[in-house]
Length: 179
Image (cartoon, rainbow, N blue to C red; front, side, top):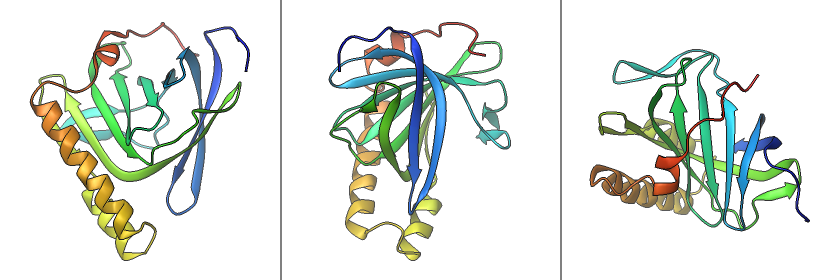
């Protein structure tokens, strides 16, 4: 695909099973054969809290690390003042190709489970009930759900031991204003 300028605008294509596809825009900061780094404003309908702390709201941003052939992505979350507040990890179906073209990702499929790692190191598994509901509605196969749960257990234990997220995620800082 030739060398294109970075940073540049990028669309993240994100699918929630069974077929809720959403698109989010951001700034592509890094692209390698195994990883994309995209900075974006968070798009939420209402504030989202974990253990009483708002982790996503209007004006919040994230730096997303999307990996080839991995069962997760990682977002380094910031509040409106660009203060780092924690890491958010979606369990996703692994992809073999990161980009559909120079301005769009391939479609990433969310597998419901999420992990929140707060500033203080507390680790929370989120949306287990969403996964259970998806199983009941047959929106996800039992096999795929079990793989997602195994990945979540692994990430949870690594995060509690201080071995997750990866160093590249920890070191990255925001570009600045995204609007």
